[in-house]
Image 1: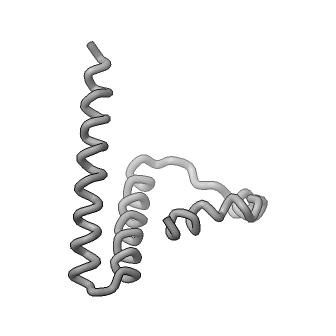
Image 2: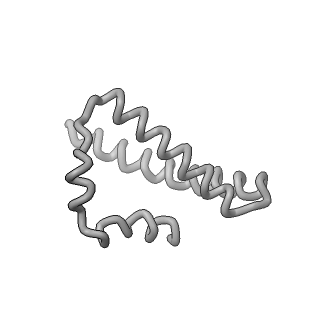
Length: 83
């Protein structure tokens, strides 16, 4: 019976994906600038994730851990922006 929650989450994910596409398209048209629309979309997403991080109180990696991270592991954001 608990598995119904997974169906609901899958459905809501699909709805959210469709709505996000429409909202981002409208933002691009409203700004008449696709790059600024993308910056706004990614920026509001970043702010949302920061709020969630603060509310959940998860640990943050140390500066040393960040420095020791291989360069190629940072390319995910670039790939996402290109996508």
